[in-house]
Length: 301
Ligand SMILES: NC(=O)c1ccc[n+]([C@@H]2O[C@H](COP(=O)([O-])OP(=O)(O)OC[C@H]3O[C@@H](n4cnc5c(N)ncnc54)[C@H](OP(=O)(O)O)[C@@H]3O)[C@@H](O)[C@H]2O)c1
Image (cartoon, rainbow, N blue to C red; front, side, top):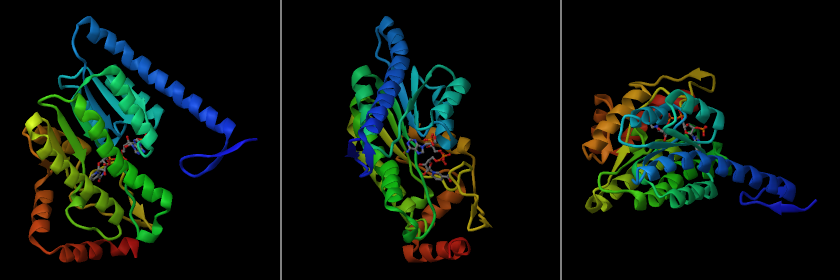
């Protein structure tokens, strides 16, 4: 049997590759069929279709954004995540305005297919919520090469690529929300890679806001502290983790929507995080890192 090397450097046989391609083609066809149905309605009304795009829409903060966007002036919400079953449940719960798009955002090829969908349907994007993200606690030694590539891919590359792909479809008043974190305020040893990707996200998002000012498009970096979702490990090395100042995903999404409508380039949810932000600006980062390491060393060392 013929063996081929794929993009990830893994050896696979050609049957497996063509099977994957067939599955991907069928997936894409199903997504297009979904979108086509509602495009017909917009065409009947002779209007451009206004949409919102939410990544990581099937759970946690992304799901709360999707719920809030249902109340906005958009005809569709393109809900992106990997697991089709969870996306189907989201559609059942929230209704037909939700168009489910199953994509793995750690794969540049899959991100690119979202660009193809935009090119085909030419919607007006009123909201882009770059929310999908992953996190892992641990020493730099605990990360495999695949985990490093995946974390940077989802938290950074996907966010930048989707902004670049979506901005040409935006108009005056369109809004971008990039879900960064309180972790972006200072370097965080043992949450190092995550904090660094979130700092990248905050920095990129705020600069983008300046670049887009003339076009009347806003870009807001959302920086919550601990949020009660499945992203957080509840235990590490057999020890239960405490999360001071933890808030609900619903609150984070609600405040972020309020802040983006006010044109803010950062959304910092709760007084506690605002104080942490101020302290991070005023005190030496070395001190902030030492305090952090004191707090988490019982879990990681
Ligand atoms: N929870 C917190 O304490 C906290 C604090 C500050 C900032 N944040 C940020 O908030 C954002 C959302 O976090 P969350 O807590 O809501 O996470 P979550 O509950 O774990 O949900 C993550 C969402 O992202 C999707 N996702 C994960 N990997 C993906 C991939 N490769 N491709 C496409 N979709 C993917 C998941 O669906 P599938 O698994 O089906 O793909 C899911 O819908 C993240 O950017 C995170 O960094 C979280």
